[in-house]
Image (cartoon, rainbow, N blue to C red):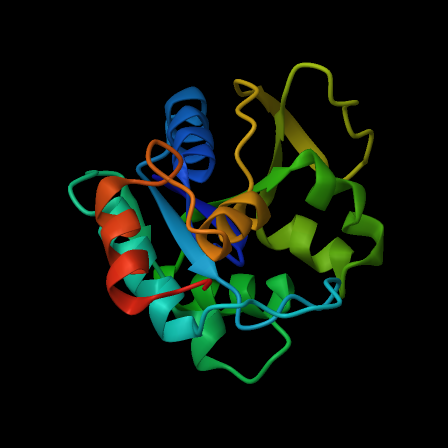
Length: 188
């Protein structure tokens, strides 16, 4: 049995995240994919806009009813910044001998050499990179496999900007997430 790990800010989670995770689970035969929201990513200059509590709640709503998806809050429960190596150590301890598959976008994979203990990250989990048409493939000794995913041009920053200007985010995020954002007046 293998568990996929998909980390990020998820500020907010959107259909692009969900489709990529679903395609990776399908292509790799993963038993489940855990979405792991970061408290603060070390290579990003700015932290998330929404609180960890809101981002976890939106992930729970977005993954509800999907048999293979779950949310793990280990990174938001630790002091920032969120280092992947610490997350993988924690998951390895909790999940025992279960094989871990770290799912990365090409942008994150390009930064792998800059990650804390990147060599240990590669020992703790198989690293899989999601590729998209028109995006250069990442060449790295750390990467075990590439998985093709559709090019879906949805970004969390665009969603936040649309919320700020009171534009529709329908079809960009799951309906329950859009309702949550509206109810809590996030990104305004």
